Image 1 (spheres, rainbow, N blue to C red):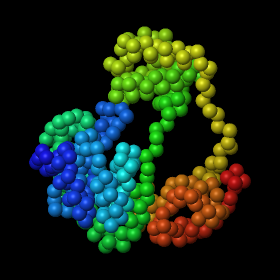
Image 2 (spheres, rainbow, N blue to C red):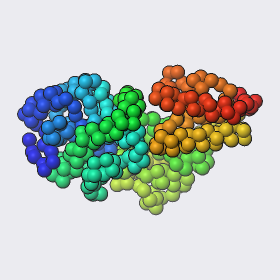
Image 3 (cartoon, rainbow, N blue to C red):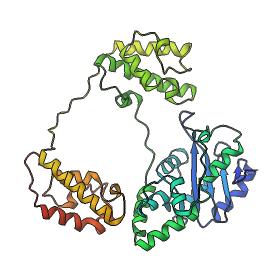
Image 4 (tube, one colour):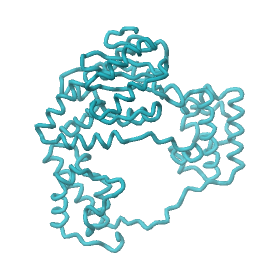
Length: 389
């Protein structure tokens, strides 16, 4: 083990043999992870940070430890609360890289939001709730976490993300208990822990999402598609993120002017040299030889009549009022998708407007706000309009 000022690096089998039982015996854990996506492609988890109830921090090096099953077992135990701040990425990365799944998630970002906080970054929440000022040097915010050995300042930075999380969870759950909102937190965390990694859209389909693709001519869009496929293959070949090969601006510039000399195009990375440049030229030619790619046309009738839009504005006003009453951000009061469906179908029962397979409205929202929303709708005596139905 190599000691940093705030944590202990676990990067050998001997160190892991000592750390594993401590993790297994912990009554609860705070967790964070660091990935290398800004520097490597495809990205991977390059460090796992754990804070234990005794105040110690373990920094696990997954690049050096081939078997972390003891950690996976602890995460999967519903009797062991796992404290994470803003868990969405972490939950998906654990699934992607290790097939690990959290069964007792307590997300302090969600807890802070339910307690009325609006600035939800870890540093902001720590300062607001605990009075802890967490330093975040800018030079480390895009650090290459695959770098080895990791410098002590990077280890300190990583440890700082978990060292206060257990105390933060205690303070926030106490606030929510006083507000009668612990059940809200539990429901939101059970939803959050069920997230799973979704494979990225294949490059041959992802080109639609490049900013500026819509404005291209159909022949240029065919070139763009081949450029995006080329960029991804080159990124995999050199192990660097796609934007290190060609920026999105370079993609659009080349697709728009395929005869332009590549030396004159900004955003062309160092990977596009020698054979890489020849492969790029071949991709451009494949695009020019392909048939034009037309932007999909909308065929459905636009259901948003003036009356429906007015209803939606009124529903947003209702949501804003309830947010003020509860001291919460309007975004957490009620899902916008459900309000939009209600605006389009004002006579439908509220529950029928939710997706039974993937409901957007939470149980706590129905209990706390469902009657208010139904009364609001009934008071306005909205009538369904033909275009909306």
